[in-house]
Image 1 (spheres, helix red, strand yellow):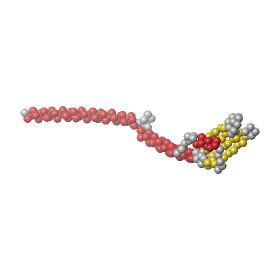
Image 2 (cartoon, rainbow, N blue to C red):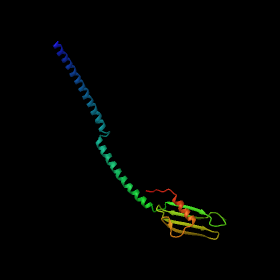
Image 3 (spheres, rainbow, N blue to C red):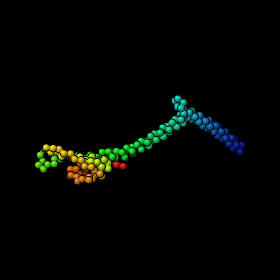
Image 4 (tube, rainbow, N blue to C red):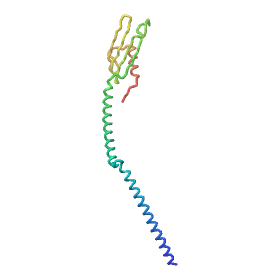
Length: 165
């Protein structure tokens, strides 16, 4: 009985050996298959390998980042410069005469930058003559007294939506 028991172990050992050899063969076949797939993946159409392609793309990304930083600086400079350009406009048309004859041919025009500096241009239209006045504005205020229509033009200009930091 003991001989039969040893014989069973020998058969089991032999079976496990063949199974192990079979599994090793399958693993080697899979490794070889993966090697050919990897070679195809890492080698491009014209023989360019993936590493050089990654390095090239990395350099392009770095160049784009530098260009983006430069463009951001330029945009900030332009925003500072454009802050002093006319950005807000308010126009009020009216009839300055009590008798209300004629039309609304007179006007007050506010031209302001983002800091509320600029001018008010007022045209007083009459039957015999037309007069134009200008008043300088600093921070939305004038050194001379403003008319009601001029104040309305400034208020209308300030209601406009402009870019602010």
